[in-house]
Structures are given as structure tokens and as C-alpha cells.
Length: 224
Image (cartoon, rainbow, N blue to C red):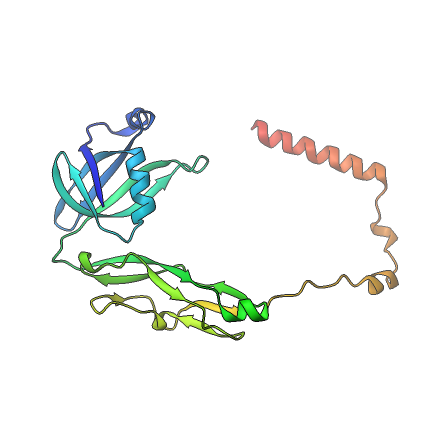
């Protein structure tokens, strides 16, 4: 996937102006290379991140010069979710890298379809080591054969390309079939048999006074 960027000369608080112009500040760093500050068009970056995530090599043209890199970190606004800054890790095709690869569930488990059981996902990605060109975009987790409660798929069960080494512990559970939990019926009869503790019963006036006091305390915290 291709991405265009330009060298960035604006730093600090001034980068807010870049974001208003829909340009995202970023940095490119890597083993044996000098970190470079860049800006990337917001729309193009968002599309690339949705498609590539952190497990696909991007071809970034910085001022026309091509650089291969991974998206290493994305910082977002905690309220709006907008991308604020991106770290790219430059890679060399002859040097192995470590990166997370997402685990994507495929199909519907037999136990879910026929027994009404629940498929529980315990792991969303696993760490691998390989050359950049061998990095998988994702690992497919086929679950159709899971037929009974307790059936599971571990990391060791994943189909991994020959030139990729998985770093996540092989015994780690990826998905497991569990029995659907039934909602507990309210013990009506037992509750009716227990006499209420009248010392704990508050009058309507007391409840209103406590509610008024709580609201006053909350308003104080907001104003601070």
C-alpha cells in the first residue's frame, strides 16, 4: 500500500494548525536511521490504517523518496477518536522485524449452531518475527469444527507460513466454547420469607434530604 508524505518543519503547539488543515503529524524511525518528522494527509492515512493496520508494510513516499515502514503507534483524541499523531517504523527487507498479527475468526462453530453454546475469544492478536515481506496480514481462525463445550483453539493450532516464527506462547488459548450461562431466577419465595430489617428502612423525607446533599456535592466537584 502506498502513502505520500512531506517533511515536517512545524512542531510543538503549532501542529494544531496542521490538524485543522487535515494534515497529521507523524515520525518515521528505525534501526540505524535518523528519525524524520513528516505530515500525512488525514484521509489517506485513515484509509491506509483501516486497510493495513499494524501488520502490513506501507510504501511511504517522503518528498518523493520511497521508504518502507509499519504503522507502529497511533494516538487518538480521547473524546472524538480523531488521529492526532502516528509513529512509523522504517524497515529493511533484509532485517527481521517483530509485529502483531490480528487473529480473525472464520465461520460459525458447530457447538454454537447446534447446542446454543458461546464462542469466547481470548486472544485478538499474536506477536510474530519474520522478514518484512513475509509478514502475514492476518491469521484465519477456523472455528466450524468446534462441536462441544470445552473445545478450543490454541496458538499452536494456527496455520503459520514457514518463514514466520510465532512469539506468543503456543499454549495460549485463542477461542474456546463455553456453556451459555442461564440467568438466575430471583429467589422470590426466599425473599418473601425474610422479614425486613426496619432499622435500615429510611423515610421518604430522609431519602430526599440525602439526594439533595449528593447533588450539592456533585455540583461542587464540577465547579472545581
